[in-house]
Structure formats: C-alpha cells, structure tokens
Image (cartoon, rainbow, N blue to C red):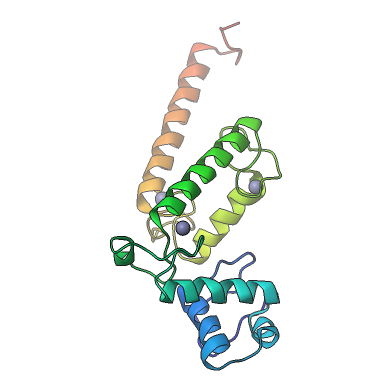
Amino acid sequence: MSRPHWYLSRVKPLQNHSWTDREKLAVFTLRSEEDIPARRVAIIFGVTKTQIYNVTRLVRRGKNKECFSCGRPLSPKERKQKGLILSCETCKVNKKEYKRKRRNALLKKGICPYCEKRKLVPGKKGCIQCISATHRRRYNQGLCGNCGQRPIARDSDALCTLCLKVNRTRIAASRTLNSTRKKKCPTGRSSKK
Ligand SMILES: [Zn+2]
Ligand SMILES: [Zn+2]
Ligand SMILES: [Zn+2]
C-alpha cells in the first residue's frame, strides 16, 4: 500500500494501517476544496474509491457536527467532544456493546477476535499471527511488545523496563522451582502421579 509523500513522511506503510486524522483531513481537502476526483485521490492513497467516499463522508459529517455513523445532528453536549470524527451518544453505546459481544462470542468459540479467522493461542487472547502482528506494530512504534504502554528499555530489544522486570522475576522463579525439583527427585521423575 503506497501513501503520498508530501505530508506523510513519518507514517510507515503498514498493512491494514488505519487512517490518521491527518490523512482523513487530507482526503477531505483534496475531494471538497480542491475538487479532485475520487478515482485520483484513491490512486494517491493506494486504496479503493469506496474508501475515499467513506472517509470524505466521515470528515464532512464531523465538520457539520453530525454523528459519523447515523448522521443525526449532535446535541450541544455531544458537540463538545474533541476530534475530527464525532459520534452521538446512542451510536457510541451501541458500537461499544456490539464490539464487546462480538469479541466475547469469538473468544468463547476459541477464535481470534482480531482476524476473526484463526484459532487462539492457548492462554492468549489472539491467534499467533495477530499476536505477533501486534508485537511488530508496537516494536515499530518503539513501544514495549508486551504491554504496548511504555517505550522499549535501553537494555532490552523489545520490552519496557516493567515487563522486563516481570519477565526476569518469572524466569528466576521457574529456575528456583526447577532446581528444587531436581534436588528432591534425583531420578528426575516427579513424585506426583
Ligand atoms: Zn449516531
Ligand atoms: Zn488473529
Ligand atoms: Zn511493557
């Protein structure tokens, strides 16, 4: 997926990379103010024409202080929210509830809620590909691959100081556990059956 260079020098071309506000605004400006045909804007952004129409509509509704989803004019209280894309309270609640239900249903079935296709890794809430994709994305942003909250520690390749500490404690604990087991059972067999 290629993206234009003239204003997006810091954006990396990732797959399924979601639109930033800056990009949405750029699409809107090209379409409405400069009146460039959707087909051409689509080529510039490396997406389909439909996506360009959708993004333009979202930004237009935001500028008109309408809900991006249902298009209803926002109430005075809803108008106060920040951001380019605005939503009414009803749509916000509905969307959250829908997402939560869908995610839970998929997890229950043992299916990854991100790609909605592959099986979950036992003990994790995603499939192997989505987990590693998340890891990679965080890494590219310079964030901890595990929590995604803090920057990568200086003495680590992928984790923040906190996750690193947790990991080390865990490794140390399992080592202690293993060595005590060996002492108790010289044959290496577990006494439990
Ligand atoms: Zn709405
Ligand atoms: Zn997945
Ligand atoms: Zn972390």
